[in-house]
Length: 250
Image (tube, rainbow, N blue to C red; front, side, top):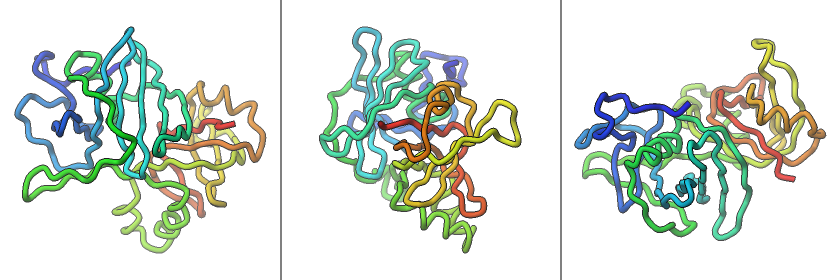
């Protein structure tokens, strides 16, 4: 279900917190803003709206790890097609369920309600941090990958304060191999999907049927891609928050 702006005046509300050179800044998990509202200090992801054609809306943003992400969805946008690029090379394409609480989910909501102005697609190069004013700097969202997984786990084991400051709540996206799928002890409908990333286990707990219907046919060692928000670690395993995804790349 699409999220609705919090204000009673739909025409004067939007989810973006700021605009920079045609890109809209979103913080995720934030209420709708009225024109003139000042954004609260937070990590901001800047998203370009590329326009709508044939009921298909297109967006583009940078994940902070050197990749450009392009999103496309057909009204009413229950499913979003996501493509990741490194330079001009397409890394992977996956379908994901619309998530209203994320930055891209908020951008889609604004696009569906006609709050965004389309711009041309940018290059496949990451944006630099954005200075809002001389005393406040908002950084683009940080994404960690397979190169970081060992340090993330070590930080959680040796210095939990550093783990909370540097990693918890940040996005994680990496290639790996499928290791196992088992039913969650906490839910009858949820499963734990474990992926080996740089030799370290990364878990995604999910009850998303679009994921589970695919996983049921996977073989141990199959190449996959895992995405989500860093939550915690347990016994040397990195665990992503709910809403994570695991997709085959074979």
